[in-house]
Picture 1 (tube, each protein chain N blue to C red):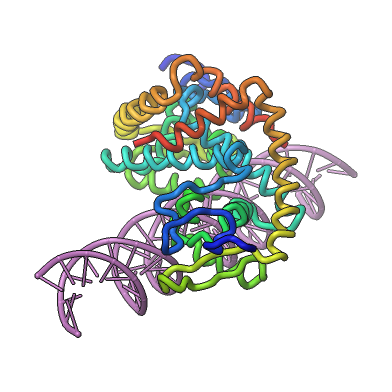
Picture 2 (picture 1 turned 60 degrees about the vertical axis):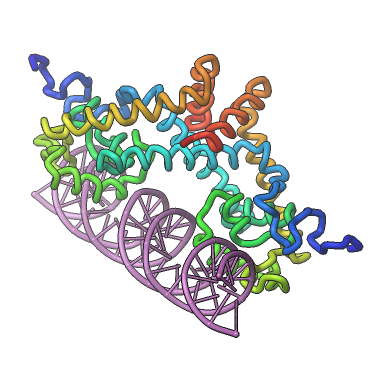
Length: 164
Length: 164
DNA sequence: AGCGTATAGTTTGGCATCAAACTAAATGCC
DNA sequence: GGCATTTAGTTTGATGCCAAACTATACGCT
């Protein structure tokens, strides 16, 4: 190496720190995996902040929606639809029951499985959360642009479904 | 409710379980946040499996790449570039130093900060990991299609950068 | 009926992450 | 020089997640 600052190719301020300087991302810059992670994290953080405003946890939203749309769904079905392990659902369901947002009944024909349903209180909370989520979505839509939105979602679905 | 199966609008098998049946995703089906999460998780799982084949952890990959491309980078800069809290980096850096993949030197001018650099061993491991990641990327590229790839990444970057 | 296997949900253990409190060093102001 | 403020990194505590072990029901075969 024959440069003058000994940082191997990156210009920095006199004390070796890039002044909020340009980071070289190398191949990460154009790789899908990395950008997917960064985008997801950013969107999640934003939604998280919004959820806090209404005093709810972001993870509860998809759960309540799926129960609302699929009354009587079992925990295993729910965990699969939601892309989480069934064991992760146990404390969530416990919490939602405790707070009176969902109701949980043993099935008669198969006494291992539960059926989950929203209570009236749960429906009310979901309505509030949905309004909040819609604001978040509008924000994202704005960034993406109406033209590309549909195609964008299609690609996301393909990735979710089609990876081996 | 006056239906016959008591599941409130969802057809199920005789014991109340949808036979790997169609889940109603409601608004989640076309919302960006949810699909972003599902895609990211799927891609991550796939990369995770691949990483295991070469005996590495998926999280190490971006870290090593960023150090390689920005020699002498500090931990705080690194954590920001990588989209993680600086405290998450402490155990990672410890591990990489312990295994002799990176080297860590106090700066002379500011003795609070470290400079991180790859060792020759680290460079070698990164080469292997990069090959592995390229296979993963090819897989994703195939799903996305060459035509939409560039636009897709642009949108992901916009989301990562532009959310408030 | 009885036994082996499969399934629904829970428990446990470990990991990655963040946020807030903390330590040590640097900077600025008087 | 001395003291308040900022900054780099670590520690601690909490959360959410997964995978594997576990419990209890159910199913299937003989």
